[in-house]
Image 1: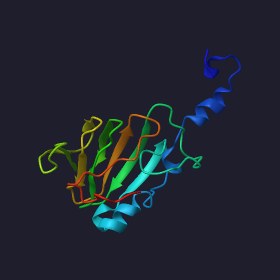
Image 2: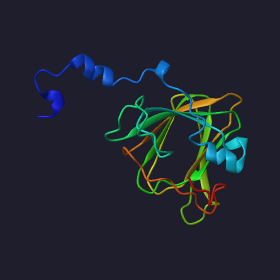
Image 3: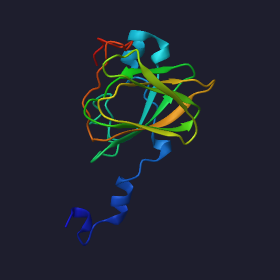
Image 4: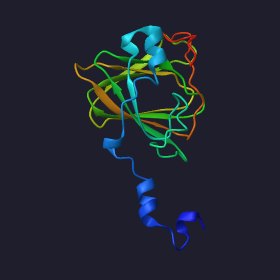
Length: 172
């Protein structure tokens, strides 16, 4: 029997610990700021954390984030014309689910990063990218894009940037 199944659990405390209200979230433009510092403003984007810290940094001391048990969940704000560079999560799948705007997503050939397949996703469209497949994205609309990012583990390894990525050689 898990601790939540035991008699006498404070259900109010339990439900409160499981909620991350939108008005308590903030746009963190600094977490991925190292990419903008390296490649310019077109790499500027904000992470809005809900469950876990994703693969972008160590936010273990942030008590505003729900602890991740099996996956991470955040929103990403991508300004018009901004990009998420080609990167690879070797250990875990990643999902993008569009809430606002349009994003162009690409999966890249593992052996030859110049080969890629590209699709445009809009409102309520989703893509799941398997572990080990390089991926990139770009906002192709005139307004900010907002999308969910779900990573299939509570603490993924840091992603890598293949030689074909504009961030190749950049470290966190």
